[in-house]
Image (cartoon, rainbow, N blue to C red; front, side, top):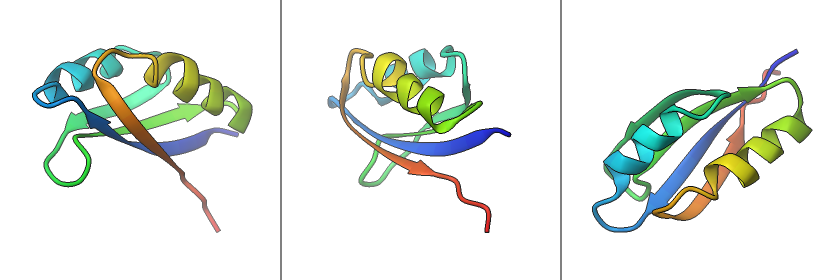
Length: 78
């Protein structure tokens, strides 16, 4: 089973493209794009389970320079 999530990211002013490029290199990230709107970068990530997904977000994504806030939205298939 694979757990997926979208991570909505706010960045420091002018850092969206740089953050998206850095996040795209993180293992487990399948998509990272800088966008306009209330969030600056949208990321799609996947992991083998919820615990690994949480570790990915906290230790690999949130620790990147230029990120000010994240919102993780797990994908749920009903």
